[in-house]
Image 1 (cartoon, rainbow, N blue to C red):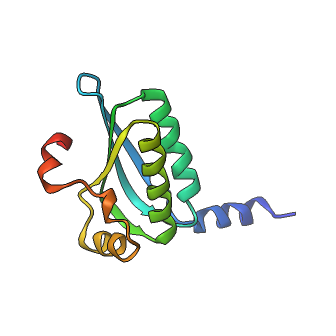
Image 2 (image 1 turned 120 degrees about the vertical axis):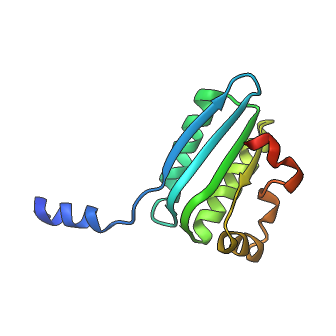
Length: 127
């Protein structure tokens, strides 16, 4: 059995979970989720559940996932974002990533996932 101090040490060594800030606009039906922190194999499943819970509670028409505050994302994070995007489209909810940084864009491009990013002309809707 693991001692309490050892379990606390183990928890403290885990990567930080991303934070999700929610902004809803009932008039437009838009839900903006601003993510900060890291998205990786260690936390992508938990983040996916958190985002899905938020979406089910809000029932938006449009979801914008603002990733400007994401400091790190690996392929598991991109896979999770792609799966969320596809699930929302199947449910009739438009979804896009907004403001990915250069490294984030590079990773999206490398993994064939640039389709998740909003079009430059659409950015006005997300502000």
